[in-house]
Length: 200
Image 1 (cartoon, rainbow, N blue to C red):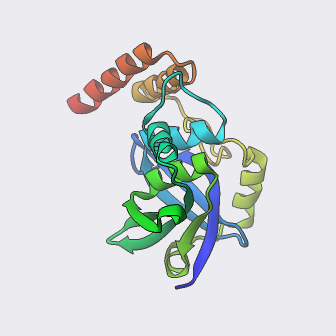
Image 2: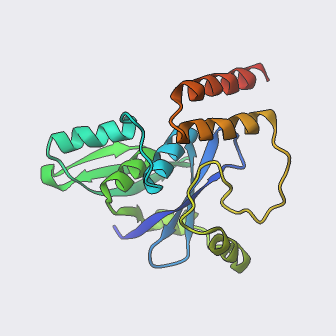
């Protein structure tokens, strides 16, 4: 099976859901992009690691890494191995124990960035789902900067700004509370967002 190495290019708010984000992957030796829809928590976990941010106590993916380290295992690579009914599947490979573990791509990538492990994808999947951006889209990416991974920002900021809804404003406050490590406020904001969503 042929594989292609890919890397995280950025994270953007998903156009299909208020509580989801698009994780944009890019092939290392080419221009194809692969958007993967992930949850807000996983987007935060990936963004925080790439931005070099840390929480005072281990978050779930940090805890998993600590457990793997404690057992002396090494995550050697991650692979997006399958696509079924629009859902991606991934595997974690541990060379030291010659084992592989099934995982969601978002969790696998959150661990890959913590271990600095390479990420691969089955070439057939990339061929079927990969997208080549238009020149103006690539220019927008360059203008935005590949180093900006904040989950509260849009991947392409060339669109005109629109007024923020109450949910959007609360989400911005939630992102700031998490960045400021004010977890008590973050919990309250999360609960308020959940309450509003459930009442609509």
